[in-house]
Length: 232
Image (cartoon, rainbow, N blue to C red; front, side, top):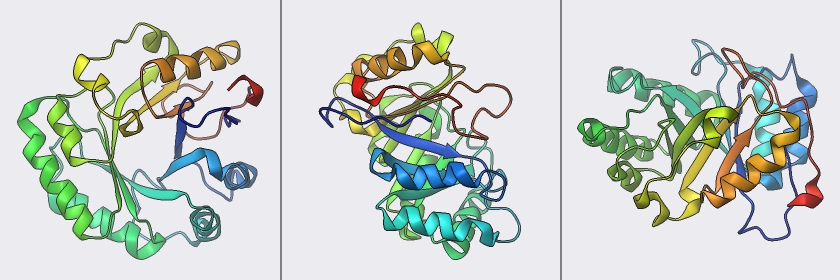
């Protein structure tokens, strides 16, 4: 697992967990999320690359437990780099709210350039009108700064550990609150877990997810390894 205690909350990133696994298949992992809720800022709920066509009641109990522990639950919504119609995007969010009671949205595949800022500003505003208290844009790389004015969380890295080691942080991001940024790092060797968390903190990302898994979907289960919580 990937949970850490901290000596100073300001120095250790919280977790944004892409929980793309089913509670009937991995019940112990959902239980582990519940046990370590104090370290988690947001759980990204993704039953079927979105909410799916019908509600799945298997998620109700684990999601209720996380909410009771103070964890925000955000529904995964693919935006396909502004190519997906807004009506479809918002329909997904409405389904999440109706079926799972989510109060956040994780907009995925968000572009980085300036041309689509207005589109995502509208989506964010509409999501909040539908009840979203947390809006996340997942770009997977640093976008132009204007996106940061329209969301609570900005995903500015998604990729392998080898790529992350050489990544850079633009100057504008250093002037923003660290709590607004999250990094999703996979293919991290077990001995490098502590290095990954230290590097995330130095890059002023207030939220992170680190896993040793890889492949097409490295988020389909929690990490296989643990790290020493006394290090943080």
